[in-house]
Image (cartoon, rainbow, N blue to C red; front, side, top):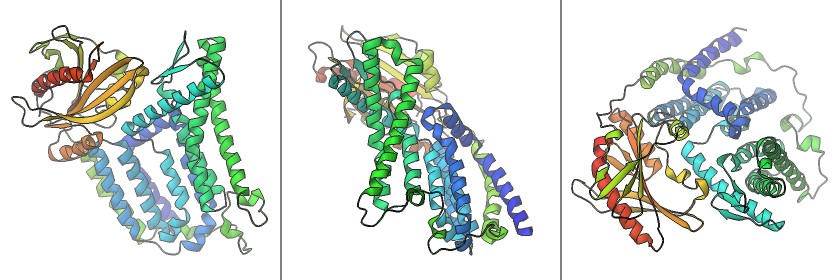
Length: 524
């Protein structure tokens, strides 16, 4: 009883300390679980993992004889990730940190063999972690294009005239835009999570389990493409209203259940594949019970001893480690950033060399979504040429959930499709210490073509890679107490009779001129 009581007390203390340390990231996690359908399965994952661990309690009785000090090293790794996540402003790193800490606690409490016995329930928790925003946006954008293409092919197969421009399906009098919510990612993530669970419960060869999990990816993409094609048929027959509201939601749920049904059918077929001996009943091949209690005819004890979870020295030391680190995390979270003074974008010059600008306001929905501190949006013209659209968004502190948003994830919106994405160096100009390195994207929508240049001005660096942006955020937050920076983007249409080289020259000329002005508004 004394061991159980000390375990409950120390565990309660651990929970309180972890809740305090990870409060902000847990709030974000729950907001994603309850606020977006893409991760609505996440709330069930900890419950399923907890049930699977409870089902393994008798197995733990066999293996959890010794505690392990290796858990302290794993916890230390998790706490290092916590520091990295706080300084780099990445929620995904904080979520990974919490998961590593939980694994470390399991090792200190149950030992290496005990933690290995519940490896799947611990690993399954990872499926509840939302993808990082820049990776999610890129994946969703690619899925939109694939789903649009599959939807058009389904429509053409049944005789409906349809054409695709980026993620817009043209049905003649009606255009359907395959928005982010229809990309299929809200099928993909839950279906992979369910396929993993099915593979764990499916007591068969490992290669069959791997095929079951991997097949969830093409199944979700194909069924979503079919769903988009079906919506197109309904719109063609009954009007655009069938693509909205209840019909759209109903089609989504039905197709997800169809996807899950296909996974179950595949599991049945895999069970019959390569069976050279009489098959076991499905109650034994697809079961929540641990096989170890059936092999050899052992009798399962009714109640495992209470000292399975008794805290050993390693677990108690891990608890003692959390207390000082919690105080350290308080100073880390409350750190003050000191960005240098800057001029507001409202004073950005509308006359730059031979370029004359006309500012425009950004719609409120985009301001709310991008969460910048200041911005400028201007159309510049020079000598009757096509205008060049200039946009820059400044972030005073790029904290978690508030950082420069890459155009690569939103360029395909509105029917635009990325034809090519390369990197270039623009020549030096007076006042520039080194060439300006930029991303160059060519996007197309039907017969229209547009060239986009963009880069990230982060303190005294001009970067083209989002991952490098995050790396330098971590370094500068630690060494300079600064995470301010901006995204800079220029775009221009390829006019009738113009070549890409002419547009490149126009964009590069303005990019170099703008680069000289930016330092006042985005300080080094």
